Amino acid sequence: MSIRMIKETDWDAIMQIQSDAYASHLHEDLTVLQSKWIASPTSCFAFTHADDSVLGYLLAHPWLGNQAPKLGKAVMVDAGYCEVYLHDLAISGDARGLGIASQLINNFIIAMQNVGCQRLLLTAVQDSAPFWQQYGFNGLEHISVCPSYGQGAKLMVLNLQAHSTPQSK
Image (cartoon, rainbow, N blue to C red; front, side):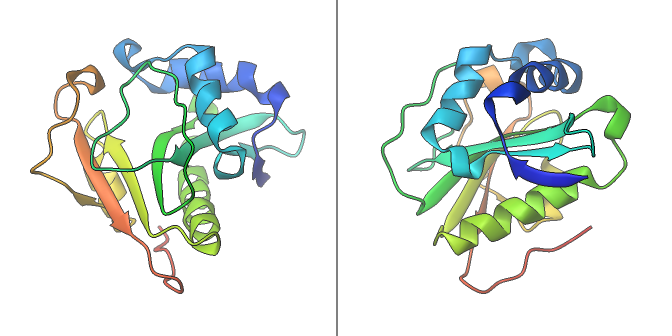
């Protein structure tokens, strides 16, 4: 099993994993998800089995500001890696509990540190804020999140330092 950048042939599996992992109001169509990858292919990763089948994925892209991108809208970004929005992390139902999410997150944090990223943002959905806190993300409680993310969604941030080590779980 390994982590690699997402490639064109991964999208059928990614769409299936998204469908299985998220409530239907959080599903985005293929062109919207691919827009994140097109905006920043080097910050989008797949966790694959030995046969190269996708077991999980992480989509992220450069982003500026303290607002989450609108759900369901394609991303068009012309920015560097000072700030990156972690849009999506999902693991196949068959692969949950194997530590894949932790591996993807730690790989992502290190990759973003290596390109000089200073801050990661995400929107915790489906009551996942405690999960993200394990990796050092803190809630931005004073900032409201677009209702399309669902009840209880929280914008979260992780400030990176050049030589900090991500926590592991």
